[in-house]
Length: 160
Image (cartoon, rainbow, N blue to C red; front, side, top):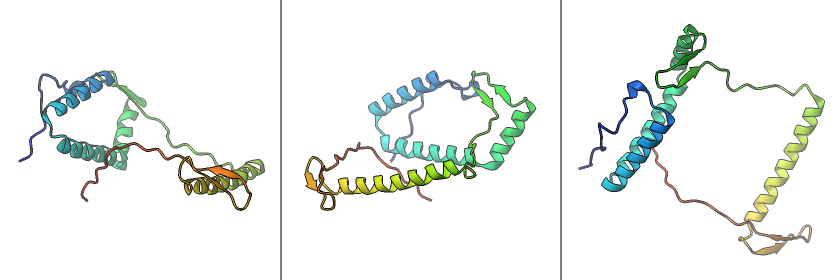
């Protein structure tokens, strides 16, 4: 049967007191060390993915955001927590409409054209193996293929 996540009551600071970045870093380091010693990395990877999804869903929930903003309003838009964390009301996702400017529209059109040309060149370079050369039949230009790089990691897909 699967092993339970290791819990070290002496190593865990109280969430009630809050966690600063240093405490989070130390807690994460100890947790990784425990994983390396005890295993159960697959269960922890799944649990972390579930926690990330949970946090994402809660933080986007408009009811939560509105309730939090209402609470901040009671404290003039800013509150310091016992841990030292600050919670502040702010405006995010600010956007400007530049479309009334002829100069901006001209630049936007030029950039769009350049972006299409750039994608075409990238596609052409990807079609040639990295380090190899080829001749562009349209221009006669000698071109070298793009080198591909990547890094190995993992992906977790949670059940619906």
